[in-house]
Length: 172
Image 1 (cartoon, rainbow, N blue to C red):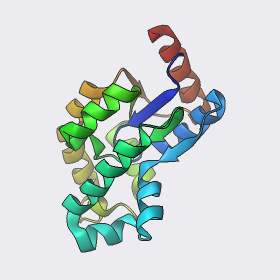
Image 2: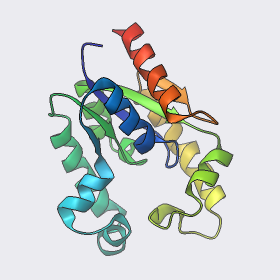
Image 3: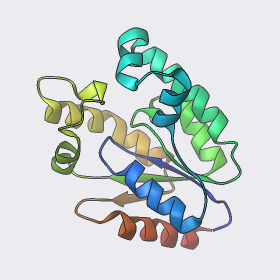
């Protein structure tokens, strides 16, 4: 694989952070999670940013962090589920690295996220319905920006990370 920059996109709970860490270890490159970088730099967690600045304020921070992180020479970057909402972000991802979309069934996404109170968009009466709505809108954006699409349902992170490397090697 010539370009050792891999950007993971996909819905919350698809495994971007867990698989991203494993992938970075296998590729021997740094791992970053754009949401964690935003939290570290702002000194506040994402639910707080959403409460104070709204989703638009959070998206502004997300775009600024992405524009900076894609300049790293090598990395695996796990992005937030909504990073694909802005055209500028989609172009940035495609221009600077290999984009891998991780997907999972709604049932798996619900199972993986139902206890997590740090996901502001899921703090609603029916999180499963919210996940369905988010996927219906965002899936075409994830797929449109991606070089590779991999389903993570019932699969271990190491197996998925190895498959990503295989597919990226075939692509280059």
